[in-house]
Length: 156
Image 1 (cartoon, rainbow, N blue to C red):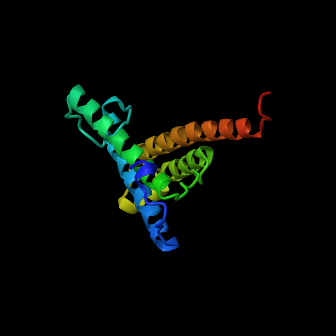
Image 2: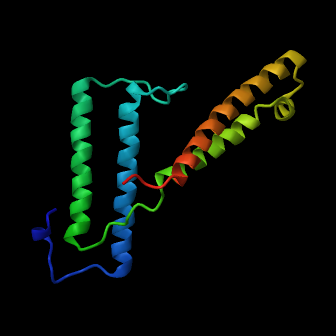
Image 3: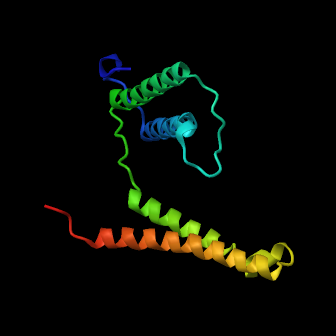
């Protein structure tokens, strides 16, 4: 829908405009989930969620259609003069929050938490401690690096 197709004399009320905007954002979110499934074939995930079953031609056709959906979403809002919201979350904050979640999950691998599932043999407890520490150390190093980088003044 291009702006010339819109009727400039009729407009949505505030609630209708917000509803349209939220629905378009939801559709864009679902498109992103579809893209994630499409691109999972090249994923380095330790536990992949999707099993790849598309041909390269099918993948290309799906990607083209998804791109067209996104164009339509932007055009719909532009045609009706509904502003698109700016991104509200800093990527760095999302990464740091994710690292915190990983750190908490890794902590819960320690024997004192795992005992809630049943008795832990001493040797297994030592291995669980090692696994937890290794994961938490990796997360901690990345977290520290990101925080140090964030404190540096921008390059000129």
